[in-house]
Length: 601
Image (spheres, one colour):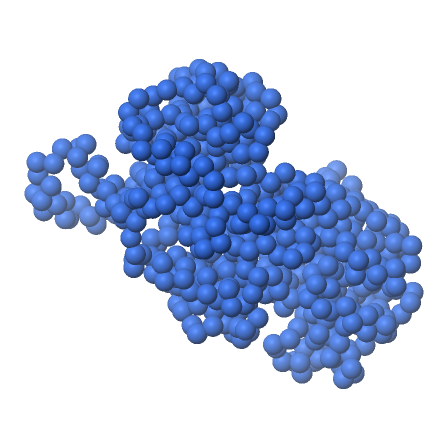
């Protein structure tokens, strides 16, 4: 018996689950499905976005529907058009073997007459945004007076968007004897009010802690001067060459301004805010889902309902006013069991907000340094080397090789490698060489360190030490699994490995200096599956130190970047190069596209 079979689901649903490739239920599914299948009860379920809530209420709802009746028996309210359509498509996939079951989506921005016709033809389940269904109820286009089940999905988001009165009006048109299932990431006062007013002795399940963030998300903050927010954002993007992120701003104006500046500076960026038309919004979201946009700059309201599983980073360009809003922001990454990073750019005056977030979310925020220009150059150098190594050869180039060999005659292998790498690397170096340190403290110390010679290798005896390791995402590591691998391999304690930054085919991590000799000794001639895994002290001190670590280590000024590049036996670039033509375009509202070729270095 499979784990899904043990939950009590019908064979038709189990067959659909096999087709969808689901292997085992998530925690919220494991807790919610048996309750909803076996009991006629109201339910409040608290679980983070991306934990599988749609299936948690979708499977029981489908199984309880009487397909012989064309009456609307189930209503699902969701905050946005995007989420409404997503839920509808998922329910249709779940019910592919249920004969006679119709699921209809109703939302703004589409023909209300066509949607009414679909309901009249028979829709046992309606998935709706609050504004559109309230309008249709008032026009007599939808009858929910015989409803058996009402689902409030992302309830806190709907209330944050101002739908409280709409939800009250909608629920007042439903029978008292129906059952209400409320799913929410957080439990603010307004959600509690809805539960008390319209639910009868609801059962409650919680995945994780109330109002807590997802455990798969690492939270980091960077302290900069107020005028350095945008340069800091660019450096964070350049430190993560394959970033796929949502950047949150507080206002529509800031959102548009930051997106336009990113595009002008050559990044694949786009804006998402309330001043866009539905068509512009659809274009931007389509480009984002296709990963033609790597940095989606959005307001909190406009980002409601974004449901993309492989977002690598959430960047808080500005912190929101409400802690619950931060929880929703960070929940955009670390979804479906994957890990993610939530970065916060703050000024010194905002540090109290970080303390408040830590206390409320019961999660530590790591204090990290904005990378220096030379640190970014080092990371980009590794990225370029692996990109070259893993580029598939186009056999058409064979016809041009004789002429190319004539042009390159007299250039030896070592010099040729340097020239090839320098074509791209020089752009970053020219831009970042002699740029200032954006961090608000330790400027003198860091400037002194940057000026020192890197020719002599030393093993630090105090502080924390930053290491380079030649494995990364391409080797199926993320910051969680790499941390576990390092701890288990070296034999370190739970908190002894920190500041783990995973790139596509290499990574960085920190330990206290007392562990350095043990770390380096462990990875001397160390192999995994016949391949050498190299660890060495990094030229990149970024991310070192932090709270409770006794300051930042000074790192090692040992082997040069070029020698380390030759030692790197890691995998290549599996992600998207920002130099790749993304076929983006730019319109007056959404503003997205690719201008990397015009990058102003």
